[in-house]
Length: 447
Ligand SMILES: Cc1cc2nc3c(=O)[nH]c(=O)nc-3n(C[C@H](O)[C@H](O)[C@H](O)COP(=O)(O)OP(=O)(O)OC[C@H]3O[C@@H](n4cnc5c(N)ncnc54)[C@H](O)[C@@H]3O)c2cc1C
Image (cartoon, rainbow, N blue to C red; front, side, top):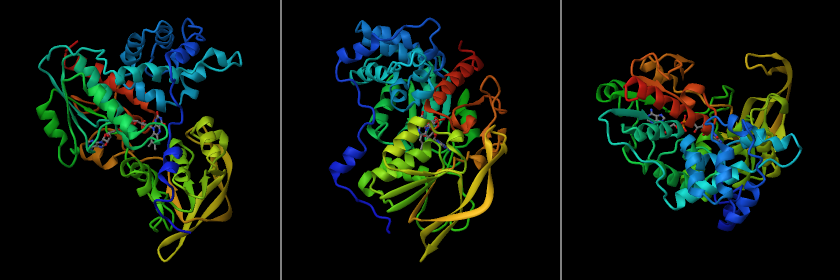
């Protein structure tokens, strides 16, 4: 067993990481699906979208070949509507709410239609929003992820001069650095960021980190308001013996490397265990398999009923040949010569519901062992607790606490996205950015 890179040919890497949901090839194909829409009154698809995109309207616009209008409808509610059409778990949002499901017919492919209009807008660089002349107010945003970008775009439309401070060298946040490459490519993410910034009035200062190269006091002094959209941090530790052995890796770092270094450069084991059953775990497991791992086993301490990924995501992992061991929790990583050799797991059973409302896993005292050479930790992310405590920002175990106006306990400092909710989806962060911008506009009395 070994952890090695460059396991596949270029053609195999390309095939394994190709777009999982290919787009429409013609307007005719898009119109055929658009014509199936029932244009429901009080549309459940719109209600289930955190950004409230007027789905029937944009679909209707496709039927009349008004693609520019359709893109405008989408972007008015969600400036990352192009990215969301590729990464949103639509089976539990708009498409899951489509009335066709009740009729036991195929739901309207809303995401695919949304992708059609928004990609046309990006390809043709249609400028659908005009920034108002500068009103002479300045807002600083920390983080160029979905929350920060959506906040920036909303503010810029109103003539606010925005400066984003981003610690990485590219924008997009976890869209660019976290989400699986077969859902959305790093190149598309760059294009999406450029498209959002093309409204003007937004300067992004890359390689600038709050707490290191810039301080909150400095931002407060130099700007009329500050928005914190820095997401959540590194993967949760397992706190088990052997966690420091070579071959135990953090899922976020593993995916970050896939997205920044290129597939052949990323090493993967022959036999990989992935701890967790959320979106990150699925992305880590499927991508490990697609990089050429022979066996990938996902370890989850509860059952299918309690998993946080959707059935659709689990299906992707299963179709890729990943296995799942339910009711198992990592207990110890065993090694030899400093390298991972085995993962020892406790066998669990379900007890009473815990604070999350889900039945809690209880250790039965029995164990089993798996021969593995790589363990990927994907048991959740930990907020930037040290950073928020340093600035005396109210928080719950590092998650920022805000009031109904998106305001933190520090005057003029607002927050949203994963940094507040602890980790949801891109579409939630986009809405949080819009809400934050609205609150800031009211605070600086621009509206
Ligand atoms: C592996 C993985 C897979 C996912 N898959 C999906 C999916 O398929 N679909 C989906 O909808 N959602 C998915 N998500 C969740 C989604 O990516 C997030 O909910 C969303 O990106 C949150 O946006 P955000 O702007 O709040 O934070 P982020 O996207 O994390 O952006 C925060 C930005 O702030 C920057 N930053 C952090 N600290 C500082 C600092 N101190 N100074 C300056 N800048 C800083 C970061 O570099 C980053 O650019 C996934 C998440 C992960 C981890």
